[in-house]
Length: 366
Image (cartoon, rainbow, N blue to C red; front, side, top):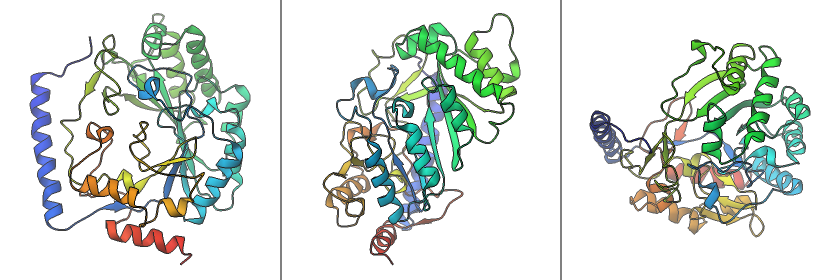
């Protein structure tokens, strides 16, 4: 049975919800808007995934199960850099980068492009072979790479991902390959665990003869390979209703309806990081919208400059809906939502009006 939070936890969430909501409303009354200016965009090389995790919307995705052709990828990178984007994420909203057999070519294109800055991505680390892992250690502009690890032993891996032992064994092998490159993963790789809440292991706890092969491999990756341990992710949203309690009934995870996440105005992800899906559709957000309810254009019929401009009524319409608290279904329970009235830390920000003004100036070559 899926996890249910205690009464104390629910009370704490209600208190925090109202505290943040009042804070965001106060900023809105004062006319403060905090739109990040990070110049980053997500490009999804693959809309396919080798796993079928029960808390992910991938199994119910109806569009975009394709791999992006290399020539399209190059064209989209070129258009993005012309608009001033310098940093790139290659994390799919519901896919796996190494499902793409052209992944090596795409990484080389980014590495050798004169106008790109850095890039980063998540992977489940199952599909890369030895040659690809060797290549990863030699990429020049790779800033960060996260390993999404599902389960903590064979039983939990198969229960969560609906995949057999073969893929589990490949994951264990690849984690050990990372560990074999002593210390080279420091400041580059991270492990993000997704397993049962009841699994409380930390690398500091060490291992013994009862530890699973996966735990032993993660331990080696952290202690010998220098990989950062980021703990277990325990709460998941429903992807706009795509994932139901019945889907996760045999997982010890919490499925939330998003009611403890205060939403006031537009989400900064509408401005901070648009996504280009593997089939060329452009999404207003890099985290949700596999139902295409946040699609704002298609690069087969329009340019990226046109799609992200202030003249795009579809894009402006989604932002206007957010500002009126009329959120699309895929946004209502989203745990990644961040209010435009929440001051960000660590990067510059502007207003909504100035955001579009700056984009239009870059598009005009100013």
